[in-house]
Image 1 (cartoon, rainbow, N blue to C red):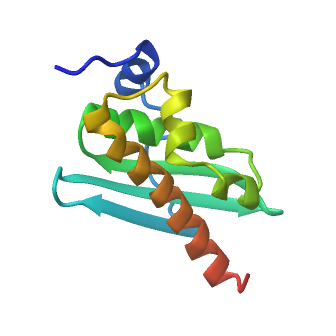
Image 2 (tube, helix red, strand yellow; image 1 turned 90 degrees about the vertical axis):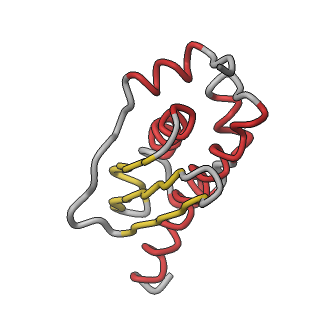
Length: 125
């Protein structure tokens, strides 16, 4: 079993912001058919700030931990700030990920960015 930081284990065992936002302003979905991870992010935006961020993830422990961390990092940020969240920032915030799990951090950031792009499209931005 790969070594996971304490922070990864915490976010895997006690994920934050799980669920969906029924009237979400934006929804982003990504999947990696190779590893089977699927992530859906939901954002609620008010005055250009991500007021709420929720996710549903089907995948390994790292994918769940990444989703939880991305949601925490994005909540309360402006749309522009949230678009700057990268896979490297997520991995760093989690105290690192095993090399074979780094793709999970890409998925988390991508799903968030897709949800924000969906919001922007719907609101003509």
